[in-house]
Image 1: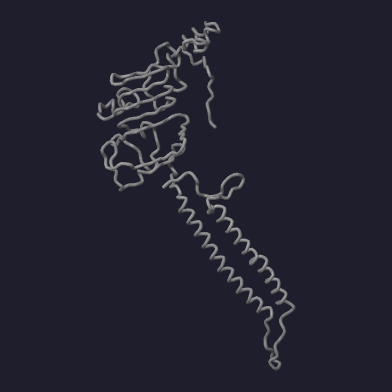
Image 2: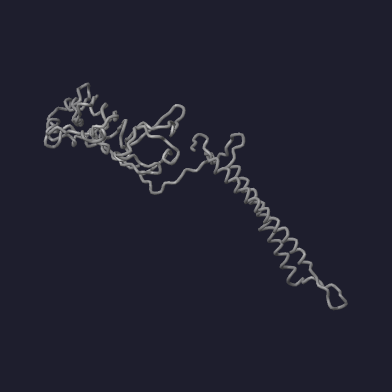
Length: 328
């Protein structure tokens, strides 16, 4: 797993003046500097947020909740910065500027920051009207992207890792209403935009549709049935071929001497015919029966769960349909 390991306390990231002050403290003072031992923590890694008059900012250290208007970065950005109506927003942030966070720059000046959808460590962003796909740099996928002229209400969660945990179940549901929050009608003319895209690596170059398990199961069973029927046809051919081979083994001609039947060709045809007949029985007919058993095992192990009981190997189910997860 790719990772960047940081020290729990990285003194090197302290601004020069603050670092000089820290180095002059005794051990107890250094502990209190970082909030240990009941001391008040010095917020050296907390930049100053540039707020506007229309925002209500709740802050503790480098954790923020900002109530205001749509604002992806500076005070002139987003639909709020463009003086649009109907663009209320809630921005919940933990760790502005992420690992680069500091209270002062190298010159001792106060570090001022705007929202930064790229660097901020963790965020939940809610907006009544926004262009999130552009602001977060997301691939288009099959459902398409929001645009400046086609904004949408949005809830965006971003962090190094996201975990959704439910004590019972999770649903991802689309197209629950006839209109979106902007008043646009949700018609079925282009149903693909109501789908769910799973895009790893933010790369939509090879998007493919998910397989429906029941349909795949039905197809594979039909395929096995077709193969079984083909095997039956081949089995019939082998039987008919064996009959003609047996007939050829005892095949005789009428001789020119008074129409008496000649004897079979014991020196070449009969031995070869017996060899071929044995090979057909051993290598064809017997293998057909093995094939029948293998096809039956495939269907039983992967495509069927009689009475809900799945075939298990090495502690893992072989049944191709998930017991828990479904999609349309």
